[in-house]
Amino acid sequence: MITYHLDYWQVKFLFQLKGSVLPRALVYAVPSTVLAVVLSYYGPKDPGMNVSVFSTWNFVLGYLVVFRANQAYSRFWEAGTIMQRFRGNWFNAVSSCFSFCSPAPEKASEVLKFKHMLIRLLSLLYCSALQQIGVCKDEQFEVIDIDGFDRESMEYLAVAPEKSLVVLQWIQQLVMKNQANGVIIAPAPILSRVFQELSNGIVATVDAQKISDLVFPFPLAQMVGGMLVFSAILSPILLATVLESPLWIAFLNFAVVLSFFGINFIAAEIEMPFGDDENDLPLHTLQCALNTSLIELLDPHMSQCPDLNLTADAMLCKRYRCPEFLVGTKQKIFIADYNEGNVSRQMSRRSHLAMSEFATFRTHEKEDKDASEGSSKVCFKEAQERSSFHVITEAVAEALAPSEKNNGSLHNMITGTGPEALASSKTTNSSLHGNSRRISPKLCTRDAPCHFYKTSKARGTQHSVLPVPALEQLLQQSSEHIENQLAEHSVHVKNHIIRVRSIFSDHLSWIAEEMEMRSEVDLSMVSVSDKACQGQKAAFPSQQEEWRTIEAT
Image (cartoon, rainbow, N blue to C red; front, side, top):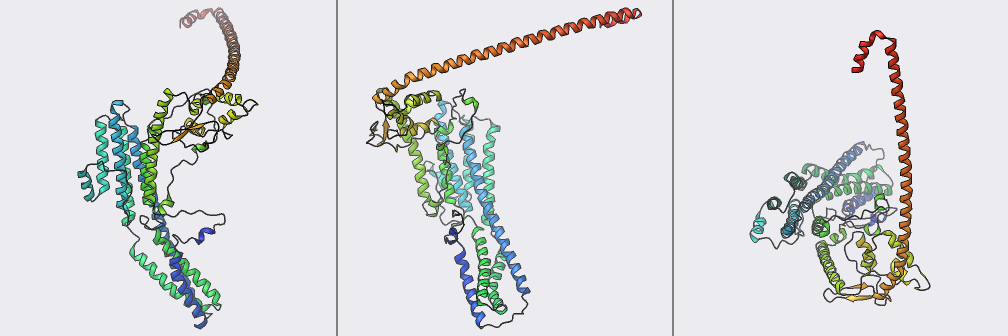
């Protein structure tokens, strides 16, 4: 698939020949125009000739060409929709299985084996589906390593007529087996969602195969092609007979023939979107993108929900712009690599880099933990992570403001505004916001005056570490100011509590007074009603028996 960008005036892309149908349309338009120019000089002239039949002919031809183009675009759009649909269905099934796995430590090895088998089978399932619906010359799509599967199963899959159905059955058997041995702990009604997603995906694959097997009807394609060729011959004859100017004859004939043939070639180009043409869907890229997403599921951070430090400030649920480190992190389809024919190599390299980067991060984390136990040098990242409250961070920044004593060097190390800024602060900011990947230092150089490099022979990498004197000076200058700030905040909190208590006590007294007043009013109303009843009894002595009944009731 060709990606292009429209400029402001939408002119530059008009001169792009890659993927364009104009060169093929010119093969018919140029000879027809040359014939029209020749007939304009040497052919007969009849300006009063009735050309209404020719107008009707062009109308019917235009209708057929546009009809085929509409059908072709509908097929292309439906194919792209189906490809994304069953990719999403199958990936959702795998993601659900990962979330249904048991967290028990004794099941850790079985869970890990189940996850690795599942992503390999799903990658193989997607590859089999693409081979089934595609008409590519190169059907060796990228799959996640399948060398660990037994040879007998792979030999059976090689000769199976419906490979996607075989792999689908393997996945279903794998899920049921691990549900029985306790690897998957989800109840059966919830687990049925996985099988529903798998079935929806295979149904979408059948719909895509419908587009691949059922081409545009041959009679319509033949009729449209024949009428176009006849129009390319008839149009210059009629225009040269009716019009006098060779310039207008050439222009009108060229525009009509080029438009009709161009639209027809567009329809023929996109009505079969599962091929190797430049305007077809990037099947290799879609396969590589799915593999990258599946490998990403193996990252332990994908199976752990991030924790939230629910402070009083966090409970306000403030809204602000998305942080910069979260911008532009969505997965990209490498169309450029696909167009150059390097998509398999590029995406495979990215997958291996992702896994090696994760392994390197784990190694770094373990080595840093071991080194921190016997080393007196503390990483600046750890020092910044200890400041868990935003108030303390502001206090440190204020304490280390540029002064005559420190010349602003420590302030620059904190804020990252001077040459002494540590690139590890970028790593710290990313880790504090959930980005666990180690970012290579870019601002650190060997000539930096405030830090040095520590090289590890085991991993051959370098990272910056803050020396002990600088850290001691940092903590010494900031500790007193932090204590003062905390004391001031505690005083403010106490005053606020006293103020709230006074307001609360005022409200309680007011409520008590209201209740007392209401009770007095109720008692006065009861006494008035009793007196009224006594008066009624005295006024009607003949109804004493009825009053006794009423009082008893």
